[in-house]
Image (cartoon, rainbow, N blue to C red; front, top):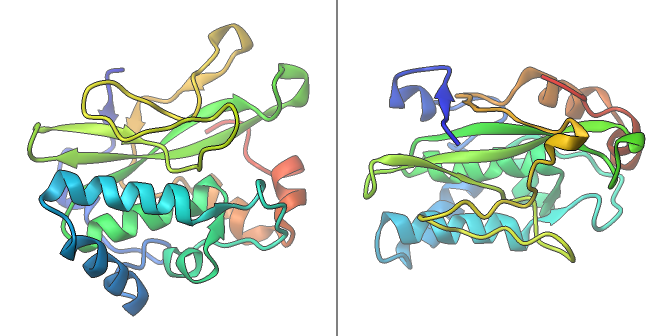
Length: 202
C-alpha cells in the first residue's frame, strides 16, 4: 500500500520517549547482542523482528492478565499485546539508529463483525539498502497467523477484510498513537482490556 507519514524527517523516527525507552540498559544490551551476530543492517532488522515476534509472548495467547507498556518492561516480562510489542521492536531498532514508526489496522476482535472492532498495532522500518519503508508485524505467529520478514511482499499477521469494514491505516506515526498508550495505562487486567477496552478506531 502507499504509505504516508506524520513527519518528513527520518530523525523524528529515531527519538526516545517514555514508552520507547531505548537508553534503558536492558534494551541497549539486547540491541548489542543481536547486532553483534548480524551480517548487515537488513539481517539485524530481521533478527530483531523475529526476536520480538517469537520470544515475546502475546498476552492474549498465554492468557496473561499482566499489562506491559514500556519497551524495557515488555523485555523484562517477555510479554505484551501488539501495542507493547511494537514499542519494544521500535526501541531496539532505534537504539541502533534505524528509523522505525508505528502503523495500525482496524480489525474485528473475533472472526466476524458482531464481535466488535479493535485497533491492531504493527511497525514500519526504513531500510537504507532498498531506500524505502517496509511494514513488519511482530504480534506473534500461531494457527492462522503467519507473519514473516520480507523485502519483496508484505507478509503481515492479518489481511484486512474490507467487506467487514476492516481498515488498513496508511500513516506511519513517529510515536505510538495516544489511544493505544491510554488503553495500556488506564486498565488493570489485560484479558479484560483485550475483550472490552481496546480502541475501536483512531
